[in-house]
Amino acid sequence: PATFSDVSANWVTNGSGNWETAANWSSSPQIPGGAPDTAGAWITFDNNGGASTANPVVTLSQSATATGLQFGNTSGGPAVNYTINVGLPGTTINVLSEIDSFSGTNSVNVPVTTSADPFYFDVLAGSTLTIPNFADGSYGQITKYDTGTVVLGGSIHQNLTVDGTVTFMDN
Image (cartoon, rainbow, N blue to C red; front, side, top):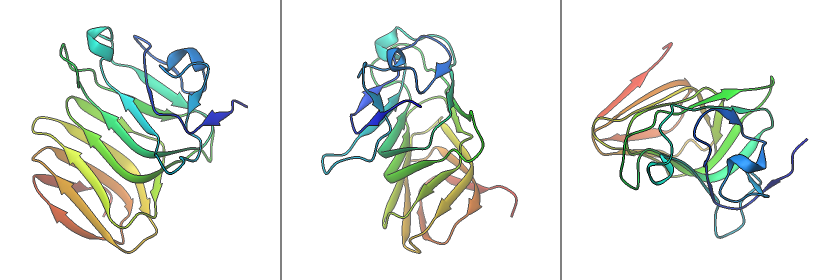
């Protein structure tokens, strides 16, 4: 298996690929997803300064941890829509503080867990973030900023403070 580190990194491949392939990341030869240190590890999926034009499907086959995940065009050029898929059963992403979606339609089809209190979503107008399997363990507070849409499925035990729209899947 690949060895994850606690580095912050940006997906730099113009297209789909495996999370565990170091060359797909700005941090190569390190692969993001190891338990973050106190500085935090941010994992970014955007258009890589306009160099990415495809709508990538990123396949994660080992469980990963990040302080935060960020999706969307942050540096000009076209929006890129990301999909994060499960490569092997039992794979999860543990997110310690927040998930942001600044543009596009982004889906995290890997189960996402958190025990953060508080936990944040920041989804800008016109953007949609879908997480079909979101589970928290804190029984604390989720705050959703901006007017974009978050679609969640799974187990929500936290109090919600919401701007914009949050849609719950499957009850």
